[in-house]
Image (cartoon, rainbow, N blue to C red; front, side):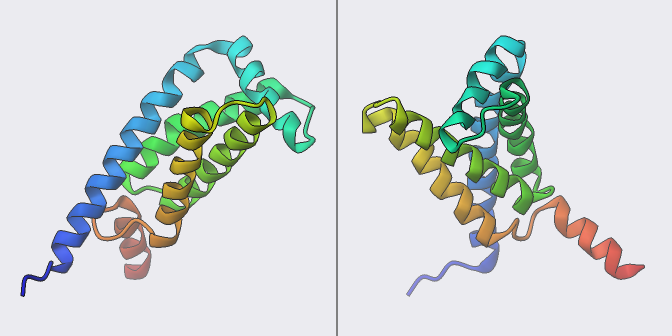
Length: 142
């Protein structure tokens, strides 16, 4: 019987973390570069949750979450915080697409799938190859 070693599991997890992190980072970059008009449009989605003030701020936060959160996932830096913020961002996207009557495929399914991945990453943690582990080890050595 063939069994995967822990190193192979950690390698697989690293591939998922880097791949998803890179793709969400690429997804967020044009949103950051879009400027205040883009941020206001994105931030308007918070209105579906009853939050109607400061749409430019919320849009910028969503764009930064996708871009910086993707980088954090790739590096395994502040991994759980990034995964939690990304999960919330995808939740807002799902609610927004539902509220405007978009079809399930692909408009609702895409952020829903990513939200499921991000919540899974949150619970799994960064695993072996992550900057978070280096930071944790240095704190324990002090």
